[in-house]
Image: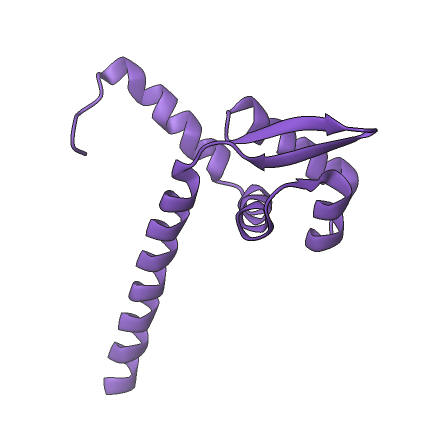
Length: 110
């Protein structure tokens, strides 16, 4: 870390990681990053899960300030509100890809 946070603020960091520590929420974020603003029905179709499940996870993401929400007619539309999410996802995914490639290389040598 470039600047250490005071210990009392680390709980906020831990909470952010808890919010991001769910595969359904990560799928929602990946979809919004790839396709831009979508409504709940669009996300349900793309993720193949229930409307209640998508809505529950969107509420968590919205309360954390990670996604924004606005009404258009009778539908609520969601978009990425925190631009650091894309950088964070890229960083983690790239690192996991590198680790998987290294593990594959090591197993290929054996």
